Image (cartoon, rainbow, N blue to C red; front, side, top):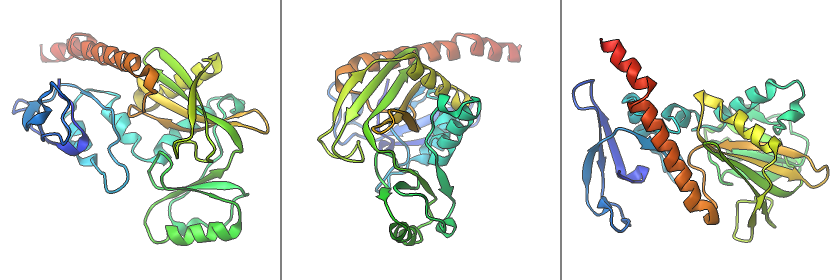
Length: 296
């Protein structure tokens, strides 16, 4: 078993029967004790557990490594194809809209209303204030701004004109707490977070506590687990409106979700169980039987 960050790996995939998927792993800047991370090494990859994003801020972009693993048909948790679809916010949100469309009453899956602009040129009509603008693919509060007037929206538009990013805009929900429904295989958790900041994930003054796992939360998570061919690990973010008491779903996060410290060891154990299950299915189960039958 090897562990590395995206920045420390490079990938080469060969034709069938000529070497498989070969990964070069560079020496880690801060190697974990008792691991081979203190030296460069080369390995053939059989299976991958993804635990970090491939495209983030400050130039962090490891999409080519992801593409190479997809090129090599490497099985993974979550699947590499789902990781590709989670690269961009509109693809993720489109999947959530498809879930909501399955319900006669949209409040059964209370997705926040969102507008997308492919370029700044479409940003002509000011949304009803207050609202939140999000630029490009970034998550975790980056590229996000709260606006309360037409003039602020026009200023925001002028900044977006300097770049080629798409933009999404959604109403600002006056929330008193935000939360996350976490699903790892068959295991569910719900977390409640309170913060003095309108971006709950910014700053160090927020508090996180466990929340009751209701059937509604489980249904939302189960619905989300069906996207992009099925995902085993997810975190669905939502806010609780202080004025109406209603929930609004904001976004879906995949296998790179952060873990709450007091549950981290147990949750990592659940992830390990999922990996073992998927590896058994891949190498010893029906998938293996089908591959053998194809060659007979």
